[in-house]
Image 1 (cartoon, rainbow, N blue to C red):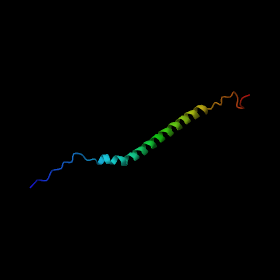
Image 2 (image 1 turned 90 degrees about the vertical axis):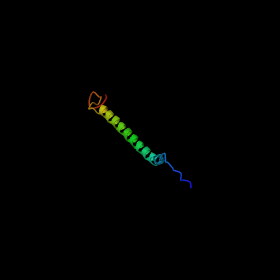
Image 3 (image 1 turned 120 degrees about the vertical axis):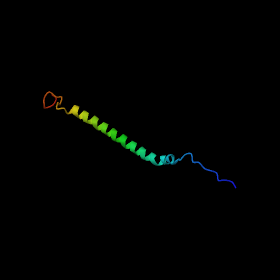
Image 4 (image 1 turned 45 degrees about the vertical axis):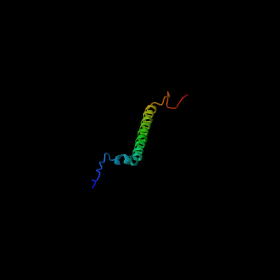
Length: 67
């Protein structure tokens, strides 16, 4: 009689097979974070610009406007 051959599993590739399932979710999260950071940066730039232009000074010598 011959003995049964022993099989040794060297690696389990379940993590490798899970990458295609998680990759789209990671991409979506990255895009959401990128858009949120861009919007906050643009809002901060607009606020800084508004602070410079609406600081109380109209730039005219009198309140009636330029002569």
